[in-house]
Image (cartoon, rainbow, N blue to C red; front, side, top):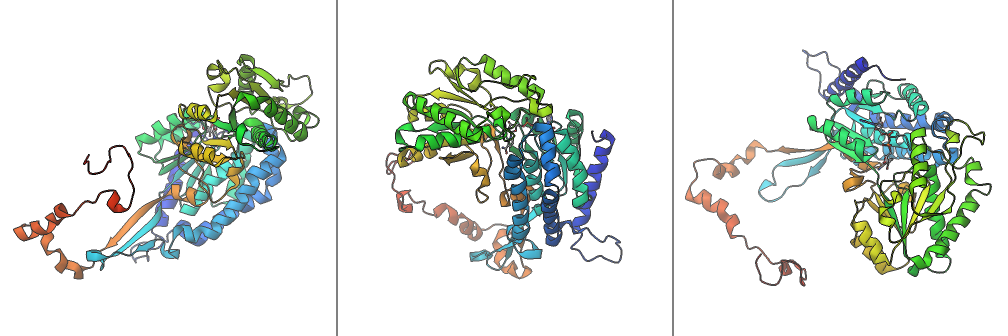
Length: 526
Ligand code: NAD
């Protein structure tokens, strides 16, 4: 089911009209206008829509879970834990905290106190809705990755067009049915379809595009956005490494580390943007790490993962073939798993696309060229890359694109500091995987190849607003401005040239020690 191309312009026009009308909502209607304004920007309206979003997800949890079981074979607990619970919690928190995000209540904005010669002026910063926005979401966590950006758009006062993924058609169709039942159709719409529909959508001018997906498509969308100077949020993925500092893990801790890594890998069968992609570990600790992975998997899935309703499936035939191809082409040694369903087991639909949780040990000399260390795996395959030391692991990570996350398992304070200081990534997580997404009070997002922009909650809201500064200069300040108007004189020039005589201090004078800092040594002026 796709939205007819001819309807896309109409949806855009309707959302634009809602936004324009909302701008006049705070203005007293003059006798010459009949405009009544639209309440989109009022805090009560935004809070109501956020609460409706929480209701939508809560009241339709069964249908939503069922849609992902059909499309992706995704276990119910995974959907409730990582998607449904998070959307309900964050929509409710957004409704409660909206006023503090916006600042200044219905007046919207924060006063700024000026001093010195500007003391008599008024200054304010207002967080204003950017306008009509576009949200493009992927298939892997489609509930949260559609509704979380939408929470931000609603909170900001932006009408939104949502374009869910064509890869999960049952979910996307359900979304298109539910959104108009719960949310204001004048402000929030869904468009269904694939490349022809999204191409048409991208021809139009949006005030912001919030895209979650892969880096290849991100480049197509960025190019389309650039034609309209549209700002974007790009939530992308990449290869998130796991560094295991075996030498600094106490008794029994390596086992816990392995359980936490494997858990991060088996969620949604490894199809997570923050999946632990590969493990960097010294050879001495590899046998114990593999055994601990085996123990963890046996405890998660006593009858075997492919026989468990708690283990997910690969999203499409194309990805199923890709994942099996990775297992075929790796030069590494499969030490756990390696199997895939072949149709003879009687599992149907999405559930027939099963690949076992698989651990592969790569050869130190050839690992870097192995197929498993090229693109983001997005699969339940965990390659183990033997490295000489934690320092060598960090060097490898630094030499590659900035990942979305770096996971490090260590009990050493100095290694902890080295990981933080010596690498770049959107997030860095010590001693666990995946669970950083449950921390509502830190921003999540990428850097470089893993994207830009942040979520959830207040940070998502910030993506959809712009900071508009307001300055009010009273007429009574005029006596202070005499010197700025031409003609200039020696007196006015002397006044403005005061800046040329301001002493510029050294870094030491600012209270900072400088020892061998490049380009700053003692009294050398560089
Ligand atoms: P996908 O195939 O569902 O695509 C995402 C969206 O892009 C869809 O809505 C789709 O319609 C649209 N799209 C596809 N082809 C397009 C084209 N040619 N032009 C314009 N739009 C197009 O999902 P995906 O990209 O396979 O998602 C997986 C990727 O997303 C992984 O790389 C993963 O790491 C990343 N991801 C990132 C996050 C995050 O928050 N950082 C979260 C989840 C997934």
